[in-house]
Image (cartoon, rainbow, N blue to C red):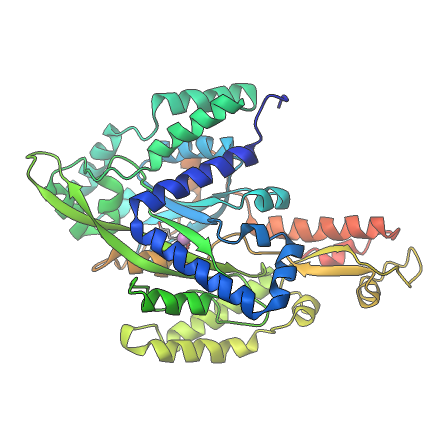
Length: 465
Ligand code: OOG
Ligand code: NI
């Protein structure tokens, strides 16, 4: 990387801002949602005077109201390979493999995201990216035709591909090239209100599965939602309903807690957008795929913490599934079950349920240099531990979000084995393991902090889980 190159973080910031502008123009309801979330966050800050200081300390204050993620869906392996190359220009790398077939959605997914903590703080934007599994389309003719339709489209502009090649050859882009790149890349994610197929073909795929229609029948992977953070998820959920924005009926993820974990999410349901179909010019219809989402992130959980989370959620879903007529039962059951999940930092750390980032504290160590007693250092305030934020996604939540936006018929019984190998083959690389990223962050932060305190760190291993 030479001096004349713009950093990947900067390109991602420009891209995220441009994408946000585009989506607010394309989906006015999203702009309305952003206004509502702004008000909710303002009220949360006014209510709790200590909140601002806490957010400033963690670097989160400047990111209030800044989009955290978006999502797209592609149809062909080559398209996924292309996206991997495109996102690399912006410092976004595939983390995690998500199999959505247990939820009846015929895709598997990853998240392209910044990985280094400093990069996430500069611009947290990431894209949840799903690849269609055409082998799961019912009906041989539809399956074959889908591949033919998809084979005809080109989702990247020639100029975009050229700029990606320049980036790969030179290890970076200059300022004018970066701006040009963002402009070209946006074309890939734009909504054009125009199907590549006739109304009849669209209808056949919509009947097979609404998600398949969304992937197969259009020019490319139009951005299907953006997601804003909020400081108060439950208030945001209530406000969406009050303003008539038609939110999904439950907040996905853990219940409201003192010590937030993982990820809570809600969304307004996809809006109907006009579509022109191929063939006779007078055929018009509508398509529902694009929505707006709100998220609130908490601590990343260790494998042990995650197993507890998965168990409590599965038990809740088994006893009180979130049916439209039984939402209150679901919420009550979720709250009751999650009483078993410790809700304070000290216990979560002591039991190894969540990941923490360590740093030297304000007080001098009372313990002797070299003893390296992490617990004593924490007690003395010579070492401090703050939770590491969860930066990934939850398959059960993602399934709920897919479902509520596919309208009628979005759920199918799919009994397919997950196929990570095929996904990684299409991607052209392996996906990174999220758990390993958090574990590394915890361990290296502890080692750095101990070194600063003049403590030897053979014990650092005890904290790396
Ligand atoms: C992606 C749904 C998953 C999330 O926040 O869990 C997602 C999609 O509908 O394409 O974005
Ligand atoms: Ni999302």
